[in-house]
Image (tube, rainbow, N blue to C red; front, side, top):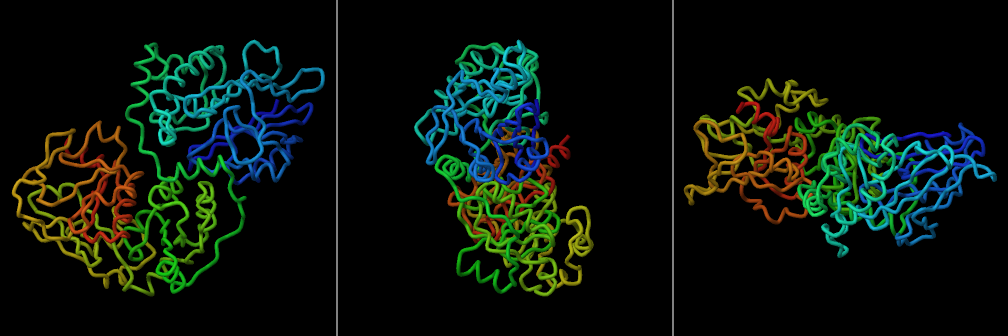
Length: 542
C-alpha cells in the first residue's frame, strides 16, 4: 500500500493519497486546489489517480476535485447525501472501494456515512487487505479531529439547527468511528488553527484508542450533554466560508497558474479608486505597522494569510497585492486556495514605492496597555494619518526597535511623516478628543484577570474592542471590552461609530493590527491597537 499525507500548515488542511502498488490504482482524498504535487507524486510511485473523494463539502478552502479530475480524468466522489452542480459518483454507507486486483485482495476503502458536521460527511476506513481485523487507519474528514470533533453549526443558515446536527454527530461518532479497534490510526482533514473546530491538536494523526481516552468530546456523557458541549464556544466563522461551500458544491472556475501582473503605483491607485480594488499589504506585520500606503488592508504571509484575508475582504473583491519582492506569486496562490481569484496585479517592491512617495505613508497607531490606563494619560495618534508613539522616543523606535521591526523604509523618509506626540496628563484616546459629556460612561466592569491599572479609567466615548474568538474572550478580557471577533468585524462595522476613538486588542497583537487596518480602510480616523495584546496585559497584571 502507498499512503501519503499532505499537510498544508497555512490552512491547517490535510489531504491523502492512497494506492495499491500492485495494481497502480489510487484515490486522492480532500485535495487542495493546486494539484501538481499530487500528480507528480502519483506518477513517481507508478500510481494512477482514478477517484477523487471528498469527505464533505468543504467551507474553509476551495477544493481541487475539479482541477484533479481535469488533470487525471479521475471521477469525483461525494457521500450519498451530497447535492452538487456537476456529475459525481455517490458513495453509499458500507460501500467498498477496491484498489486491488480481480482476486479481491489488495487495498480496500470502506465508506462510513457520518453526518453531523455536514449532512453528506463520510469517513473512509483503510485496509491493506480486505480481511484485516485491525484497519490501517481511518480518514475522518471533519467528523473527528485529534483532540476535537467537527463543529455542527455551519449549516444553520440552510435551516439545520446546530443541536440537530450535533445529535447526528454524536450518533456518527459512537456507532461508526468508536466501533473501530483502538489501534486504528486516525487521519483528520484539519489540525490546530482551523476554524472547523475549537480545540484541534497540533498533531496530525492519532489512534481511535487515544481519542477515546483523551478527546474531551468523546468522554462518557449523555447525548444531551454532548450537544450542549459541542454547540458552545465555537470560533467565529470567517466570512468566506459560505462562499467557498457554494463553490465546492456548485462548481468553480479552474485554477489558472501564473504570477500576477506588475502594476505601477498610479495603476494600483486607479484600480482602488475606479474598480473598488483593495490594496492588500501582505508584508510582515512589523514592516506594515511602521509604514504603509494610506487605506491599505493588511494580512501578512507570515500568518494565516488566506483565512484572515477572507475575513476582512468580501468574496469577489478586486485585489492589488503589496508584497515583498518575490512573494507575490505565493500570495496569489494562497488566495486562490480560498477562491479569491480576482487579483488584478501587484505593486513591485512596496517599500521602494513608499521611499519615493512619503506623502502616502501612514504608520499604525500602537500603544502599550500601561499607556492606555496609566497615569501618563492617553496616547495621541493624530487622525490625519500619523501613528501614535509607542515609547518616549518615537525617532528611536523608527530605527527598527522591537515593536516596529526592520522596515525597508528609511528613518529619514519616516521622519517626514506626520507623527503625533504624547501629551502627558491629556485625555485623548488614539487621537480624537474624548467626549466628556457623560461622566462614568464606559466605566469598565470587573471581568477577567486584567484590570485598568493604577490611575486609569476609560474615557467616555472610547470603543474598546476585543477581536479574539468568543472562547478566548470568555476565558478573560479587559474590563468593559466588547467582543467582535475579527472573522465577523467586516459584517459588524456598522455597530461602531467612526467618529469615536477605537482601541483594539487580540491575544498577541496580530489580529488587532489586521482589524485596525480594516477600520481605517473604511474611514475610521482614530484607531489604535494594544501592543502585545492580552498576553502582554496578563503578564503585566501577574
